[in-house]
Length: 242
Image 1 (cartoon, rainbow, N blue to C red):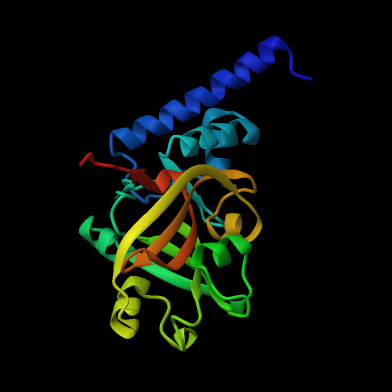
Image 2 (tube, rainbow, N blue to C red):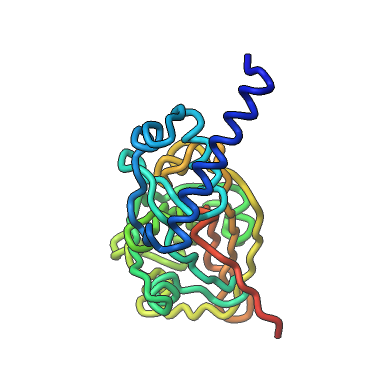
């Protein structure tokens, strides 16, 4: 059990470490995507404990100043991606406009009955299958988005034979004559677990920004339903008034 004086000392130590690293980042002595000193080095430098060092690093992570990469350590966060959810989103175009390098990894693709929320949203027939795409998206090599995409198979025949690691918006327009005319978005704070947490280099239960998106063609015909899990420190929502 911690004594009051021991607890105060521990709290003071993690704030000292947090302030030291934050100062290096704000003074650009540690630059974007640069690796921080290891936990062992920080323990030795501050004559502290691993628990105290990890608490300080967790504070910096929650503030969006640093991010972890599994088995590689901690790194300085680049600027957040500015994202207007009220506009129709093309991840590749958005990233490139902000001088970022986007990438997409296809985790899985399946023909499934699908979750009821997707079937209801897309108004598919009782005997129709959905296509489920699971993808991991990165900026400058950092995983920032894990997404589940549901599409009606009848609208996108042979889709799983296509290259699904590029822009889905572009593919839909080019190969299926789908012009996205509207989007509805629901945004909330959620948490990530298991394979999603691991892919995003997060611990189980870590907070994320969850976006549920419905995309429409023509006069509000739903053709895509997405569930996105964003690393909260990687994105900044900007919604202009109209």
